[in-house]
Length: 114
Length: 115
Image (cartoon, rainbow over all chains, first blue to last red; front, top):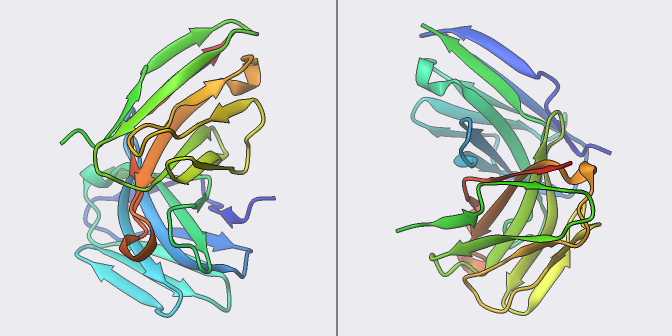
């Protein structure tokens, strides 16, 4: 039972355009959400997070939106750059968690074309 | 500052062999964990630890053992390797309690093939 789902295995975008990566979750106990980026032969690196008390969080070109009623979050990258090409994982943590026990989605491969 | 260090980076085993994947962190993190990454499955939690002497099972613990005798080290033991354990393994650590920011720090991964 996949509690965090990324239904798009891949996404292809032109440089300068917006990239939108989506993630759905089923567990109502999740109240903290994160996005990680992974390059080949490297470990994932933290990108941005959002608490369930917010519906939007921005960090430079990256914005995460949370729709609690729909149990859906999305990552927007504007403008997209070729260096953004990587696998993106969304992850969730359950209520009351005070450490990094995360549930991950399957990942979406983003390719940004010059 | 090394961060999270995993060894070995690559390993080939025969079915039934045992081995230990090593993980060490130098950030004084209380929380450490092991994930495996398989195609189409994302990262799945194997075991985790919230401090020295404390470990617990994650989503896919069968066939693996862990122990945490120090804050720095969190080895993952494969007791009797099976082809289903062919995967890329990631060790991760983070702050915990009041210092938890949500960010996990990952090692570079260990690619294991079981023949």
